[in-house]
Length: 64
Image (cartoon, helix red, strand yellow):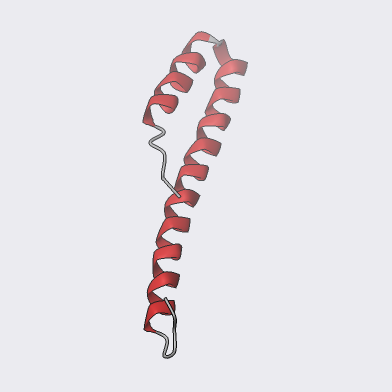
């Protein structure tokens, strides 16, 4: 699973927040937080997959 760089999207969401006034800014800010959360979960998932793979390789009798 490839991790996606969300920095461009976050910059665009910040721009939209500035353009849309208070209510729009609140909405785009919540979308930005959600996007950051997803990116963090992707990073964690990648690390956990690596750790699991290493454990599976180290297990006696493993075929991996």
